[in-house]
Image (cartoon, rainbow, N blue to C red):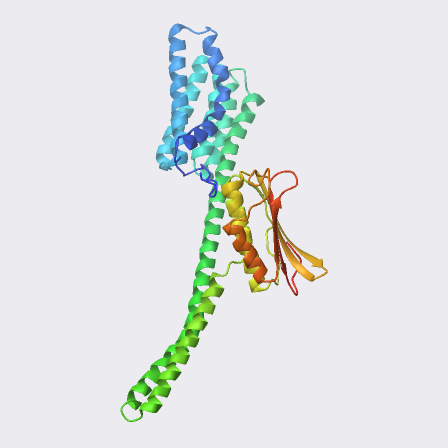
Length: 389
């Protein structure tokens, strides 16, 4: 998956590339470590040539069906009837191999249990795991194994572990869908807010312009001076409407510090940089100061992602009391090599940030960190603000 959008290769999701396929196959095939007993039994030479050949054939076929079943089902679900038939055939092979070749082959029931936990619906999986384990115990009694915990524990643990993984993946997928829905609802609400603002701003103004235009049209033939006055009023109303719309759109587009903090976390994670970012912005920040800090944070994180080569980036937003009054201080520090070995030459981005901060009465400092990396500190004055993040 991409770094900015972590993707689980989980149940019901086909792998998108060879790396994800290998990762999924590794997770499914990890249980093959228990195959040592039947392989050792075949290599010991205690069976006839025909029995050994049939044993190898049965073992390879069993493992192949097991891997294909679990891998295919975790990529695309199979019908319940097909699943029951395949799992039943695995169980039948396990029974036949155990009865004909001996107790070491009881371990095949572990894989039948894992298959039940991985592919069967939850309402059937738990019971089938218990049934398979019980069947293994009953079959093991005449073979001298019985309640062998070395088989019972892996069978129960493997089966229920797979059901737990499925539940975890399902919960993760639902959580991501819920987050996406919340984000979409928030975006829709913001669009509705803008639509309401524009309707309130333009509805009255456009109605007034329409009325005055009709009035000016009726006055024009006989009262040109009054018509000219109406035209002047139309110009004034339209200019004011234009100012109101610009203010509304500016407020709509103004960056928010809380949103930029969330965006910084996502951008740093996408770049593989360990991020230490506060969860929330301080309350009560004036709009202009908040916008200046938001732009500063965005530019600083962008530089860290693109140019620093950093492994860690720390962001803090703190309220401080100074001799000149209370300020909110934004600090962005990384451990990259972007500023190593010399002073800092301000670029266009840094110059623009300094102009934004100074426009609201603040200060901006940028310099190499004491050990390694780069640190940027922006301070803006505030009259009253909540505690810092």
